[in-house]
Each structure stands twice: as structure tokens, then as C-alpha cells.
Amino acid sequence: MEFSINLTAPEKAAADCLVLPLSGIKLPAALAKLDERASGWLSTLIAGADFSDKAGTVLSGYLPIDGAPQKVVLLQLGKDVSPASLRKAFDALARTLIAGKSASVTIALPPLKGIDAEDAVAAITQAIILESYRFTQFKSEPEPAPALISITLLLTKKGELKAAEEGLARGLAVGHGMNLTRDLGNLPGNICTPTRLAEEAAHLAERFALKLTVLEEADMAALGMGSLLSVAKGSTQPPKLIVLEYHGAGDGKKAAKPAVLVGKGITFDSGGISLKPGEGMDEMKYDMCGAATVLGTLRAVCELALPVNVIGVIPTCENMPAGNAVKPGDIVRSMSGQTIEVLNTDAEGRLILCDALSYVAKFDPDVVVDIATLTGACIIALGHVTTGLFANDDDLADALYAAGQQTGDKAWRLPVWDEYQDQLKSNFADMANIGGRPAGSITAAAFLSRFTKDYRWAHLDIAGTAWKSGAAKGATGRPVPLLVEFLRQRVEKKGKN
Ligand code: BES
Ligand code: MN
Ligand code: ZN
Image 1 (spheres, protein in one colour):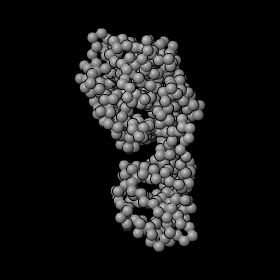
Image 2 (cartoon, rainbow, N blue to C red):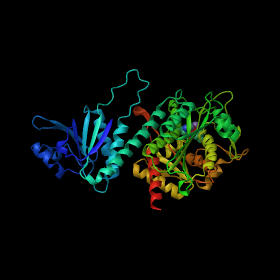
Image 3 (cartoon, rainbow, N blue to C red):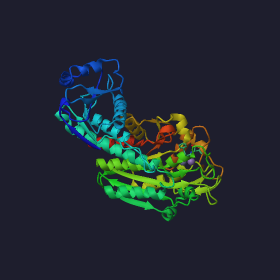
Image 4 (tube, rainbow, N blue to C red):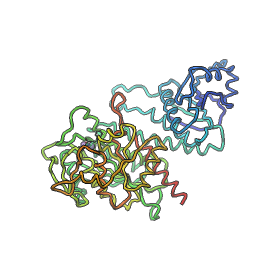
């Protein structure tokens, strides 16, 4: 798919399909010429009952110009355009275009009140990249690829060209990052093993010149990662700890302390000896979506060449039942030295994350954000709309929250107050790995917080947001947009200081 940006007038557009986004139900002055050539057809259509001022309304027809009828798609952006109404409208447009027959489209973006060309172009680009995603590698007869191959974005002001180019680059980078996350999430557990995740990291490292380190089982044992290794024990797949370093801001300077992203990489979560029920167990192949989010975010950061330092860390293994698997009641020693009584082997995410979180202290991080499909309780609390956000630092929580609002990839903060720690008491070890049914997502975060005392830390529970069940079953690519925005904001903040 090819995108380009230029300043041609809409009536001169040569594409198979001309998209006219509008705000409200009045013909904009910029379309007057086109309307005249079509003898008032456009204004009739816009004023007609089939076109409303509700964001996302789409109306298609053929412009009756002698000799050269052209397909036109009217798109309602909302009477009062907002980032949310724009997203809704562009999602609807992307569905129409990707399902349609036109190979080339021109989208005549009007100037929008309160929204700059960069954000508008990023939103439309991202919507089209996401909608064109297909996961067909295991289908003998894949459905045909979308007809659409070329997209031209028309602007009205020359001064907006540079911003629009930046928006295009961002929309592409975030879209590609999300689609990588989706691919990895959608791959089945027999293919997307810890070894495969390490290979994917190696691809990224090679393509974007990242530094890659992969710790093997023996390396982790030498570091004392008894908690992580206890989860991996029951599987025949070797565990890995993948470390990818992107040094976009250079080293040495104080401002260049890295943001570290830690992603849960359970490539299949059977529950272990505390086996899960069979129904829907296939969906536990998605239990590496935290890891996939780290890789997708890094991909986007590299494509944008953001001047930040980011380190991605992925603890990855399978959680399987076996004769040698960790059992309820077993006590393991984490890298931090703290001991853990494993009361439920299905609460394995925190067991691999805690050792990864101890490990990352060596990078002297500015912030650490872990991303994990950690608790079913998070789905009960926030549904599939919102990511659970937890933090030991208010500024960090605020920044992640704001990035979610900005991108529509929303997160909502829950407390990690000390009172919750009582639920993790163990009679035999320093802590238990579960805290009972009340506040299950919070006690999971409370568990992690015992390993993150030395730095600013946030935890994103993406159990509800990383994938969809039902007819449209599949990985969503969230929260890549939130994280890319968060990292972009760090650049802007630094620029101002
Ligand atoms: N990977 C699951 C969490 C999960 C469940 C994500 C459903 C998405 C959908 C995690 O490892 C898990 O099994 N958590 C348990 C914790 C419990 C044993 C304390 C859960 O949520 O049931
Ligand atoms: Mn589990
Ligand atoms: Zn899990």
C-alpha cells in the first residue's frame, strides 16, 4: 500500500475514488467548483436525509460528470470534530475503503478546528493500515487481498505539508507496530514459542541495529531467577529472557536514562498443575501479548527514529502441567532474594515478571513499565475497553493516562495501597503468589510492587484489551499506540527543559 500527500485541488483528483470528509452538513467552499461541475449533485447529497452529522456516517455515489463519472465517498467527521470523533469516522472510512473495489483513492482533508494536520493524517493512516491487516498464513485459500493500493491525502494549506508528512510517518509506524503485535499474538502456541519470540527480536535487532541479548536457562539460574524458572520447569520449551536495547538519544547524558518496557511472554498458559478449564483455553496463546506489545512498540520507535533510549525486556516461557512442574505449596526463591509460596500455579505471570523486574534495575532506568495479560479480574473490573493502570509514581501514572486519552487506547488507574499487601501473607514464605478473589488485579500489582521499589514503575494489565474473543477473535495491537505516545511525550518534555 502506498501513501502520498499533496496539494492538488479535489476537482482535479484522478483516483478511482474521491473521499470528501466533512464536518457538519454544509458544502465547504473548497468543494464549490466540484459541485458546480456536477450540477449541484454534491450539495443535494450532503443536504439529503441519508447523510447526517453523526461522526462515521458514510455515503457513496458516482459523481455525474459527463464522460468521467467518479466514485465519491462522503464522510462525516462530526459537527464538533474531536480526536475521538475523528477516530470513529476514519475507522468507518477504512472499513468502507478496504471492503471496496477502488484501487486508488484520494482523500481531500479539510482544515479542522482544533486538530492539526499531523494528528489527522496520523489517524487516517493508522486506521487504513489496521483495517488492511489479514492473518492468513495458515489458510489454504486466503481471502483476496484488499483492492486498495494507493492513497493520496490532499491538503489545503502548503504550510501543513511538513506536519502532514510527520503524521503519515507516525500513522505508518504505529500501524506497523500494532500489526506486528497482532501477528505475534495470533500465532498459535506451537509456533510462537519462547524461541520464536527470541527470533522475532533478532529480526528487529538486525533490521534496526538494536542490541540484542538473550539469556538462556543457565544464565537465569546463575542470576538466581528461581521464580521465573519455576514456571518454565513443566514445559519442554526452553525459557528465554530477551533484552533489546534502542539507544536513540545517545548515551552518557542524564536525560538519556532509559525507559524500560517489560512484557509478559507466556506463550501458552494452561494454568500448570492448577489447570484451567478447557473451554476457551485456546485463547491463552495470547498470554504473550505483553511481550508482543514490547516488540511492536520498539518497532514503531525504531521506524520513527525517536530520540529516546528504550530497553525492551521479555521474560518468556510456557506454563504447562507435567511431572516435574511447579506445584501448589512449592516455595521458590526470586532473584531479589524474597521467597514465594506458589499457592496457585495459574498465577504465573507475576512469577516471571518479578524476576525480570529485579533484573532491569541494572539499566538504571528512568521509568519501568510492565505490560501483561495478568489477571482475569481486570476484565471483570474494566471490561475490554480499558487497560488497568497501576504505578508507584503519580507523574508516571498521569503520563500514561494522558497518552491513553490522546490515542483512544485508554487506561484507568487503580490503587496499589499498602493495605492490599496483607492479602499476600504466607505462613511459610515471604509472600504468597495469590491474594484471594477480592481485588485480584490490585493484589497482582501489589505483588509486583515488592520488586520495583528502586525505580519509578507502572504496570499495565492488558488482559481485557490485548485481544478480542467471539467472531472477530484476534489480537488488537493495543496498547502499542499508548506506549508510542508516552515515549513521544518524553521527547517533547525533554525538548522543553
Ligand atoms: N493469563 C492469565 C490472566 C488472564 C485470564 C488473561 C483470562 C486473560 C483472560 C493469568 O496467568 C491467570 O491465570 N491469572 C489468574 C490469577 C489467579 C489464579 C489468582 C486469573 O486471573 O484467574
Ligand atoms: Mn495463568
Ligand atoms: Zn497467564
